[in-house]
Image 1 (cartoon, rainbow, N blue to C red):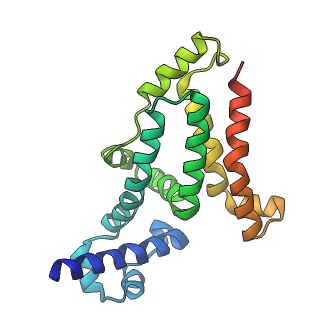
Image 2 (spheres, rainbow, N blue to C red):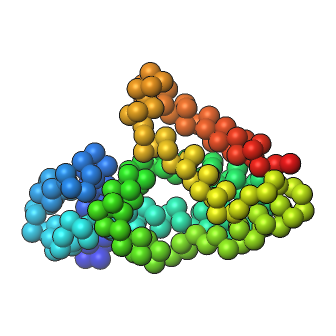
Length: 203
């Protein structure tokens, strides 16, 4: 019973922190408001997480631990590069649409603390690009793909998928979109991004 209560309290803390970090970022969030949102006192919050930094990292790792295995599985399965691009794009956009704070979390924290990437890399199933890079090279040699470096291709994929989330206000402003329109745009990008990249690299 005590273990269940502890896990329930911790989940409430992580959910509250996630919502507040998403709106206010790492620097703008306050431990007191996270405690209030979780329905506990500040002393209890500090019992679970001694600092805002540790809480921030726990929130991120909790979400990243769900995403990383999915992406790693896609990059290292036996599908063609074309199918991997489609799967990666669909899974990434679907996941980040449910956890939109993650890209800004990463960018803000890496700007503030460049060594944060070392902690991210320690996560279970952190995506490995070795097979993906080798497969791109092989498909180029076989005449399936135009000459392209696997690392560059991966950066293209990630960039086109991430940008709408980190630049959401800008995109909504330029395109005059409301929240519903923006969600529809994201749904369409699950197809359009993949097709755009595939068409640019296929012979």
